[in-house]
Image (tube, rainbow over all chains, first blue to last red):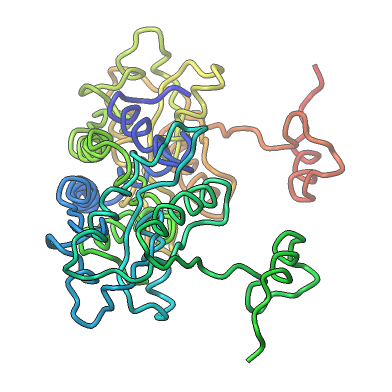
Amino acid sequence: MEYPSKLIENAVLEISRLPGIGKKTAFRLVMHLLRTEESASVSLSDAIIKLRTETRYCNKCGMVSEDTLCKYCSSAKRDHSLICLVEDIPDVIAIENTAQFQGVYHILGGLISPVNGIGPDDLRIKELFDRIDSKTNAVKEVILALSPTMEGDTTSFYLNKKLSEKGIEVSTIARGVPLGGELEYADELTLGRSIVTRTKYD
Amino acid sequence: MEYPSKLIENAVLEISRLPGIGKKTAFRLVMHLLRTEESASVSLSDAIIKLRTETRYCNKCGMVSEDTLCKYCSSAKRDHSLICLVEDIPDVIAIENTAQFQGVYHILGGLISPVNGIGPDDLRIKELFDRIDSKTNAVKEVILALSPTMEGDTTSFYLNKKLSEKGIEVSTIARGVPLGGELEYADELTLGRSIVTRTKYD
């Protein structure tokens, strides 16, 4: 596709670098920006640059934060002896939306993946053990809330070993048939595991 | 959905203002920008603001241009007596891609639409007649290449009347069964019209 000007070509190129946006969609967005008032493009451009250059991260858990400590790590109402370990920021938001967790978080920033060359040193594992070693808020339990994938399981396995050595109680979020799901449509692996790891009826 | 920071919330809001992008997709894009290197966000932000503030339009046809005249209006190889009238910039690109047209363009910037309160004065119709009236490049024919919709037909009808009064030859792009299309799957309206407006076999 030939673009009518260098400015349009450059904007299409930059926008189509975003995940899930191809050149056709990018061009459609460019045309939209050209048709709407200038202030819309100014606000959009401004929001993007500020997002990346001004966003700060919590010194403790690595969550996006307005301050040196995030709202969870600085809250007196939270149980600081209970850490929920997650891969990334959206996981924290998802867990917060359940309103079922009153502890604090720790963001790994990825998962161990030998295929992609990501080892324990590339993740925020050292920061986790620094938190555990500093005795200010004695950590009792770490909940491993990682995705049930090959990488997630590898990371959980590695961390369970390391944390147990420190005498920390380690748990993992329950896996089984989703609530509201029809049993006959559950995949074999999940259903099989839900039978093996059945819990006492109460 | 609760966002972890004002910067993220603002970026999600601005990005989700784009057509076809909801809040969930916008949040996914925000997370992508936070995960990639800063230079990517800087280039994206820069491309958007430059697109809107520095894009210039051809004084004659209204096409996006790097100069006061676009590459078509300033070309000596083009037939300046033949104007193809289109609704917007993407139409010019689409027609250029066919490599079948050697005249020049005129962009209306919309279509007459009484429902949306868009009348002839809101479009670049005056500019079209200024081009016709200035005798520098005597315009012989205007091709109406507007969408075959209610608005497109209304606009074509109006312009045909006005242009004919000026003694300009007016034509419209052919409508019929698309090339490579199966006859049995063509819609009734198009197929019916293709019979009524049949052309001599040659």
